Image 1 (cartoon, helix red, strand yellow):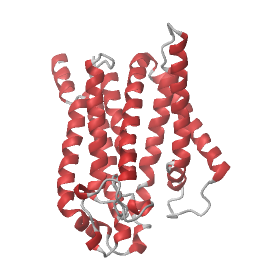
Image 2 (cartoon, rainbow, N blue to C red):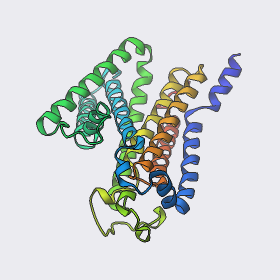
Image 3 (tube, one colour):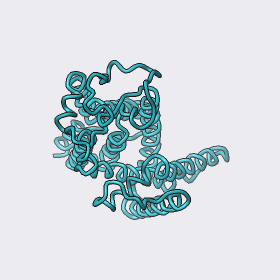
Image 4 (cartoon, rainbow, N blue to C red):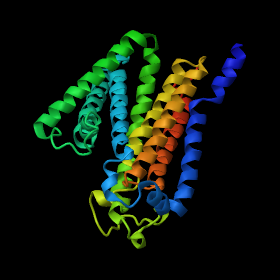
Length: 315
């Protein structure tokens, strides 16, 4: 029985999961290279009055909220699951700086990278663009309150439910921190330097459409939100949840069904987000697929490095 379980567990390890998402992303990129505009035209339609009221626009607020919870959990792991025996004062100082940077990044992410908007919208789904969304100092306080609530809940779960896995949690936290940082750096760099007009901005002007493989680095005929289609930021938030798969795998290696369930949950969120961003006329299939490709590549390669360095136990 144990041999069977171990074999099943090895078949669904994080590398296999990452490769599956990677293959899926490549297939979508190939399809998008030929049919991006047609897919958006069929899924989103040309009636701009329907885009803001569509399921896709409403669902788009959910991935950011889930990603905020993930960041809070990673921050809590870094704080609570820390090694208590620092041999050098410098090591403790470096650790504290990382902890504060991560907590600060959570608040910054919520305030200035869409999280404050996403969380607020998720409670006002009857309005596409609530006019009374928190801004300014109140927005910062609102984001800080949400961050404290998320981290408080995460700390409670880690301390009382996952306390026996603190060493593993800390290793996973460092792994997750590295993946998120590299993944988002790549996505942000691409969005800033590979301008691509969003579908809602092109509307019926198919002649100005550029496929994802022909974008020109640092060359743009415009700027701003309308030209920041590639890749998809919302899909990047959704695919960040792939980090939960190695966490479940290392905590419960003898329960492969938990890894399977987590993988299915992440896949549903990712695929639904991809569809939502296309239906809302904000992105093309290849925009969303590239975010999946970047995340799957980062998480898989960094996991392999951690495994090789024996920094991330899989036993």
